[in-house]
Length: 248
Length: 248
DNA sequence: CGGCGGATTGAAGGGAATCAATGCTTGTGG
DNA sequence: CCACAAGCATTGATTCCCTTCAATCCGCCG
Image (cartoon, rainbow over all chains, first blue to last red; front, side, top):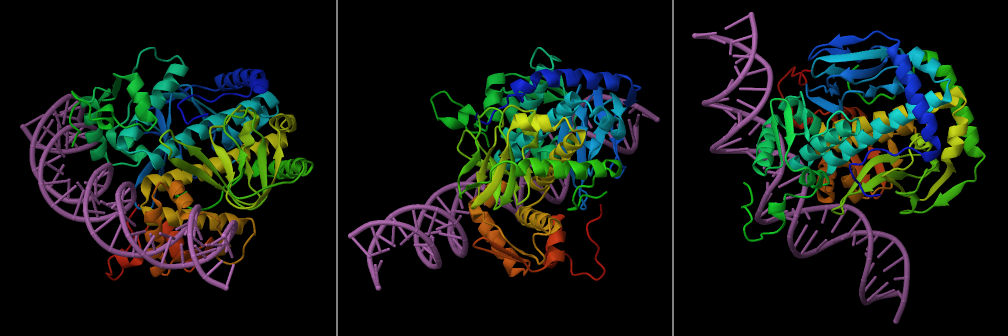
C-alpha cells in the first residue's frame, strides 16, 4: 500500500466488535455532562495526574507542547467527534496540553471509568483502534514534516482535515472552517508564520486553495491531493508552452 | 511537566494490572517460535492483511515508509525488548514496513491471538500502555523535527536511545551500538546524509559525542541532554557572566 | 480614536540541500 | 595476494528554501 491519505482500515474479523465498542463508548460519554470552553482555554493541562479522555462535540482543539526556549509545537489537530487520549487509561500523565482553538463543546470521561469500561473487550478493542488512528495521523504528519517542503506540508494538512471531515460526513463540499491562526499552523508544520503566509499566497495564485480568516476553500481537490503526496506544482514539472513562470 | 526526555509514567491505580499484563503478554510471546532475520530484511511488509505484533529480542529494526517520489521516511527506531504493532489487533493493515537494521532475533504474535489475549483486561491495559509509549516517542520525535535544527535533532535521537537502553538496563555506560547508516539517520531526522556527516563532525569537535561505524560514545551526557532539549552549544551562547538560558 | 492581534510584504542572511569529487572498508574473484 | 567493485562516509563549492528582521496594513473592539 502506497503512502496515501486513505483512512485506517479495521481488521475484518475485528470490525463487528469495534462497531459495538464504538457505540458503548459513545453511550458512556453521553452519561457525562456536556461542557464548553472558549478559544484559548486549556482543556487538559500538563502535569495533572490521571488525565481524562475527551470527546469533542463541536469546535476545534489542538494538542501542543511548549519547549524550554518558549517555542510551541502543535502535534495534532482535533476535530469534531474526535476522541482524544484514550491511552490516558494507562498513562498517568501527559506532557502535552489540549487547547481549544475555537468555542468548544465537549465531554470528559475519567481515566478510572475508562479502565472500568475496558473490561468489555469490545470497548478495549475500540480504544486500541482509537490509539491506532491517532498514531496513524501523527506518523503521517511526521512523514510530511520530514519529507515535504512548505507547499507539501500545507497541502497535507488541509487535505487531511478535508478527508477527516468528509469521512465523518460533516461536509459535502470542499469548504470548511479552520479556526487556526497562521501562527498556529506554522507551529504545527514546523515553519514560520511569515512563510505560511507567503506559501498560502502562492497556492492561492496557483488556484489550488483559498484560506482567509478561518475559512478554507479548496479549488482543485485533485491537485491538492497530488500536492499532499509530495508532488510539485504542475507549473514546475514541465516547461510546457503556455505554462506559467516558475514562482519566485 | 516540561518537555523532557523522561519515560512514560503509568497511572498509579493501573500499575499493578499493567505489570501483570506485561508478564502475561511476554509469556504468550514465548510460546511462539523464535525467528531471525539479517540486515535489510523486511519483517512486516506493507499491504499484508492483519499484520502480527512483533517482539524484538536482539538487534535493531526500524519502521519506515516510502513516498511516491522514492524518498524514504523512517518514523521509528525499534530496540531490543520493544513490542511493536500492538495496535495491529484492531487495524487491518499498516502503511509502514518494519525492516531489520542489523541481525535480528524476534517473535511474532498473530493479530487474532492478540485479540484473544485482549479478553484479559490486564493484557488489554498493557496493550494500551504499549500504544501510548509508542505514541509518546513518535510525538517527541515529531516535536524535535518541527522545532530543532540538525544538532538538536541528532542529540534528541541519540539521547532518546540512550535513555531507552539505560531504562531497560541494557547498558550501564554512555556507549552503545547503533547499526544505522548515516543515510538511515538522515531519513529519520528529515535531513540529508551529507548534513548528518557534517553535523556529527561538529559535535565530535565539540567533544559532545562520537559516532563511528555503528558505535556511539557519549562524551558529555549532561550537555547532550541540554542539546536534546533544544539548547544551542555552549560556545554559541553569550559568554556573559551569569547568562541564563532562553526563558520559557 | 487608538491600540492590538493577526496578516502581508520586502530585504537580507543562514542553515541545509544539491552537486560533485575523493577516501575508506569490506567482500569477492581472479 | 592483489585488484576491483560496492557501500558508506567525508569534504568542498554552490544554490535555494526558509528564517529573521522590519515595516505596513487590516479588521476589530474597548
